[in-house]
Length: 154
Image 1 (spheres, rainbow, N blue to C red):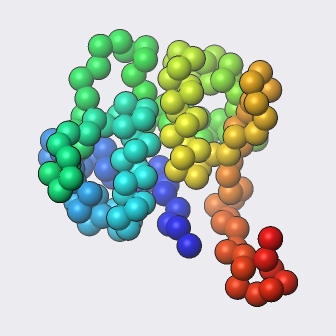
Image 2: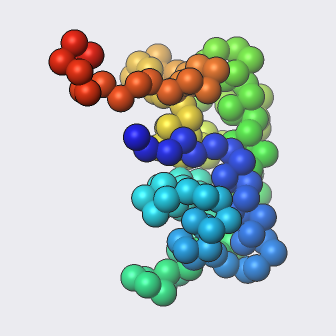
Image 3: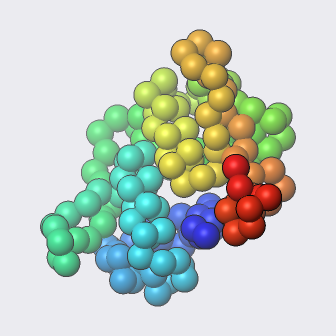
């Protein structure tokens, strides 16, 4: 069963990069206790929202803090946490809710939602104008892995 990536894991990685200047997959696994694939997933989400930037390749890959130009388009850990808090409190969030309450631009909201869905924290419902995002696993519960017994298969 895949590991659950939490906001605490994201905080740990960002604190490490702030202190050390960069982080590798091996350092991430050591600091967070996550496995290899979960670390890759975490880095992908952080790079998607612009909190980290990938440098190098193959075994020399490192992740560093990027240089930002437009402050309104900068996504921070505070924004990620605000989205999760809003969904926990209200049950769902739309792009309009995100722009009005969190104060980021349209594309930054899309990046936030994409990263949180990729990490398995949020789930997308609907399409186009009716799109909203809800918690993927309410109250921290995770679905059981079906398929071990014939009656439990989906």
